[in-house]
Length: 105
Image (cartoon, rainbow, N blue to C red; front, side, top):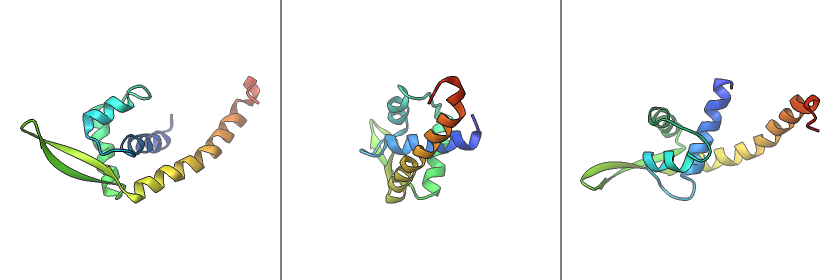
């Protein structure tokens, strides 16, 4: 898969994982596991990129004697999800075109 396309898909998946509730790294990986496998190092790279793009914010909370970072989606992050949903129709149209010789019409 094209690296740029994959990066965009993973970004939106992470945003969707925190859309309805603030979350932390391990929970995000666990929530995404039925759909995609994501390593911790990949996740934290994505989280840093999304934070730099103002699509999420971070707060640190003590939990069980340790500090845990919680991620919260911003309006820009919610907008990115909506943009992705609109773009997805175009992606599906391209997929149907590419696979139509395979009997997908």
